[in-house]
Image 1 (cartoon, rainbow, N blue to C red):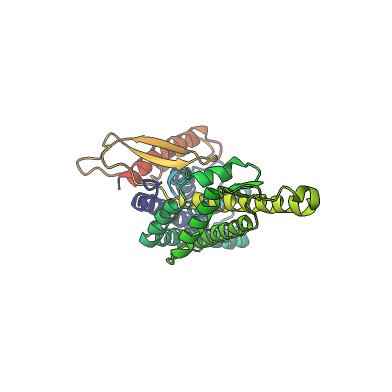
Image 2 (cartoon, rainbow, N blue to C red):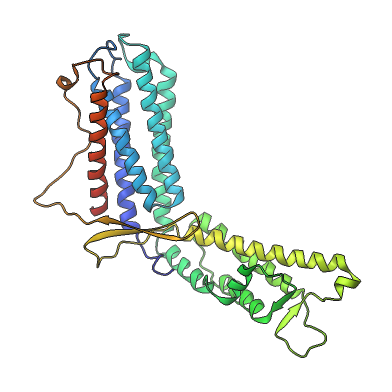
Length: 359
């Protein structure tokens, strides 16, 4: 767990920056398309602005897929919203070209409402992505990272009392070491007065503290057995089953519910904490590895081949096809063109992903 909480923010932040810059470039491309005239006719060559946007949108999707391997859930959600806003704007522009060829003027004049709505949505999504990455960068800084480590040490996933709770056994009897473990964990979390700076983590942490306190109180409502000198466990008095069955079963239900509340709160907090990606192993020059958590909370390690640019090599995305390459047929029907765009998008996406990783 300690290795999983290592500071891998540098690589994640570089990927987020690359994604943000690509989205900004697309925002500029979309604006150029809005103020450009619609296609003269359906048989005309591919409009330059359309070609640039339609080639860069798949590149952005590939960068989103890379970001999904590394970033926290809230960052991924904001990135996905940004992609959807850009994709919707590109689709709206494409439809306007098909509906009103040869109309003259600007594309934005053909549907001013669509221009305003889509431009505003892209701009808002860019701002939200920027804010989300900023909040994540601050919240996963030193104080929160240290707090995560202390929480993981206070309640290790393999501690015996936690394994007992996870077993789901009926709580007719509560071993003293289980009650003591819950008390110690509750006290350790309460004693740590340095709170999470991230509001979401702070709330989940408080939920766990409250759940542990409630379970400890429920354990306090059980009693040592009357016919034994041992203090190794407490129990719900078995005679209640005969003399007061309602109280007996209500007590068992309350104990069971308190246990489930602890397990649920613990799972939510640990999953939120483990969304922070570790940094790659610097001793592994043959490649870079990323550890992510699957839907069943099991770790998955992914490896990317090692590569290196040399002799000052650089790459540039978003190349504009020359108009001479698009004069053989209607721009919207050219299978050759769209196949070429897909190929270019795939190559550029690979280059962008590579430079985002080694930057």
